[in-house]
Image 1: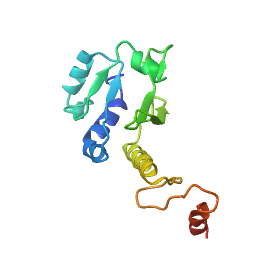
Image 2: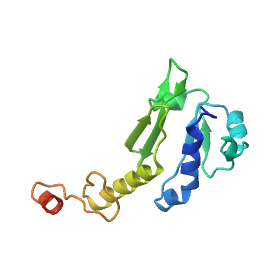
Image 3: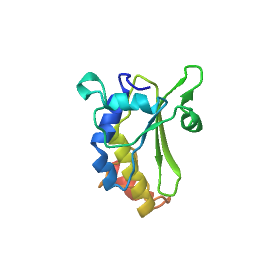
Length: 155
């Protein structure tokens, strides 16, 4: 819902780092169950007063709750949504879902890392271990070659 405490911090964080997503050939879209008029008022409210101010990403209105129900984040009994984040690749395949309860915001850094990891695995056919970051070692996914990674990191 608009004008809550965590929502504007997330939208601003993703909006302010849009260029990093664009460098990865990635689109960012925000969505809430509020009306377009509420969104407009929110964007016209200065950031220092808890609003969004100008943003660089589209903000969709899901007033009918169709999108949030389709993605499984709508809480029917409360009439609002959890904080959902979905990474969909260029082929339309859902690669990752993050769903947070309301008091905790999502991480731009982790989202960028996941996008980079999926793009890396798609391009190279290797897999990314826990906490992988670009440039770090990866694992060749077969029983013998995986040992190159494990013997290096578990000395």
